[in-house]
Length: 473
Image (tube, rainbow, N blue to C red; front, side, top):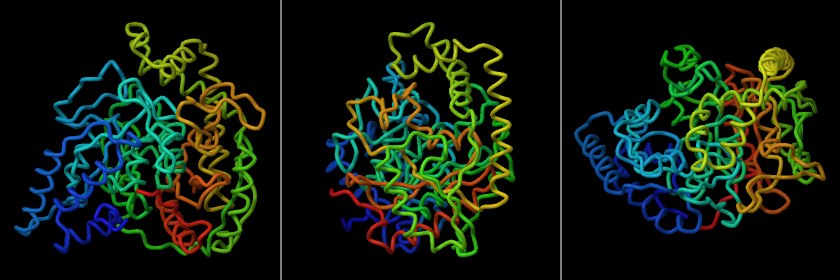
């Protein structure tokens, strides 16, 4: 490596501002990397190079005139193909929209563009984001950057792979049951799931179901923080969006002294099926960073009932979003959308009421847990990357997974508590594939989680065992 596309987003933005790198030079470097690597992994699924060049050139000219190019001025941003982008094919990974070209950007894309982000590519995703393996009938599967035969996870797999290979310096993701966090872990990059009030979700079918959020992905915590600042605004069309939520994201990461903080660590959160080898790797990694904290304790919140409440809330969301599609266009839908929606349709009112009651209790227990600790750290994925020809993990340590989502309990359990969480690379696992950890905090603790993850990233980078792995290109 050593090309412009391999620069961190923060460094590239600084060089653009100092006129030591032009947005067009960065764009051409990204295009060259895409051309060299994308055929093997299928991360970028729609591309408009000429539009990207025009945008980059216009931003470069604005800089030459002394104008402010915006927070992201000139940085290419990969968009997950769940976000509508004006003039750029947007399919949601579904045959229903295989030829769809929107006339307008969706809200979050418009904010990224307004901040000077250069938008010219879409990244692959399973249909409507329903899946822990990035594959669909429109574009096919996305391979892992460390072994293209293996999965990049999902549903933000295309974004994670594009970042790992230097195809773009920044990319968007979204997260419900781990859709942003698991791909970051599998591909050796960073991701952040914000609290529901930070990045507005104005297009949710059920506006009062706050578990799905949009968030940033990048190769470093500082880079994703840069993108998050462009995404974090108030929009009252999302009932959870607030001025305080958006303002919670600081303009700079100060480098928090985590030596004053207490961390809880757990290999499985007390509720998640985890491959014994992954649990072993995590336990071996903890001593490499434990001394950076004032205190580390092996404990986890009480996640009693989390599997049932997750299935119910997810079923409600899928019926709201896809019930009509299932009734009218079943043959055009993929397995996961059908499965989730049918599970939702089978629910009773008492099922839904009970899930709301239990989720409220979990939320309160989770908040209480953080009276005694500052952050919770655990693995970001329960298994090592598996072949993308296998749709999902069917068994862990002899335990058959009752649904295609159960192997993601290590990420969906914090979702049910409305947690915010950062994922950062922590070396490689027992198979030599990327290994990631989650830094988790309660709802509203976004700044603390980002600061801890940023400081911890520095600790991990100084150790050969825990530093970020980089794929060969």
